[in-house]
Amino acid sequence: MKSKYLLFLAIAAVAYGDDITTLDGTVYKAAKVTRTTPSTLTIMHKAGVVTVPFSNLPNDIREKYGYDPSKAEAYARQKVEGALLARIKVDMKKISHTVAAELSQVLENGSLAYVTEYQTVISTNIITESSSGGYKTHTDLTGRRYVIRSGSHGSHVRAEVQKNIRQSKWDEPVFIQGVSRGYVDGDTWTGRIYPIGTYSYTTTIGAPKKIRRYTTDSTEAFEFHYGK
Image (cartoon, rainbow, N blue to C red; front, side, top):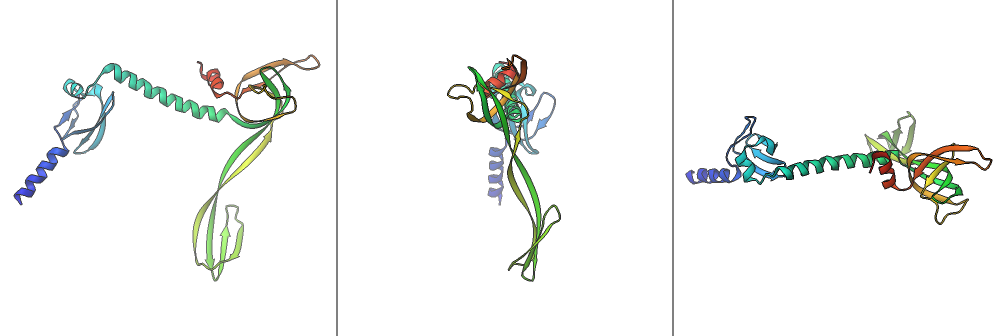
């Protein structure tokens, strides 16, 4: 029995280390460092797991785990920039449009076009199914009921997810920058476009006109909205 107790103590000694006290006075009992980054330590202790910034740890702990203030600053900046870029990518996708463009006039740096936009619409329909006496009843969200023959018995609720493509034709023509080379008047171009302000031109009757301007280049759109 005594040998088993000593073995338990030996395992505990391996699994946990000394106490760690942070600069704000928090004590983590029998702490073990499980992960390090340039700016933090992840510590497993008797009460759980916690991530502590090096700025809240004493100098001996910082030196032991190779804390470098310049590397920590660069790491923190990289994380912020990464989060910002991820958010920007989401924002860019939100403002983009998937379209089929009928090119009415192909110019040197783009084309005047009439656009049909295609949007994916996702809908969920909750269906209650029940069966009795060899028949199954379906009830959808609208309250409509359908009865079909079935060999099973009982009831359950399930969700049907449907994807539908919705088309919408824009009322006004637009200028799509980047659609020019290899195209001629009357061609159709399909792809994703991003808004980048307005485009001014003179109509065939000499009247000035301003319309919405788009680009096929996501990098150009990024620079327009967020700067270089």
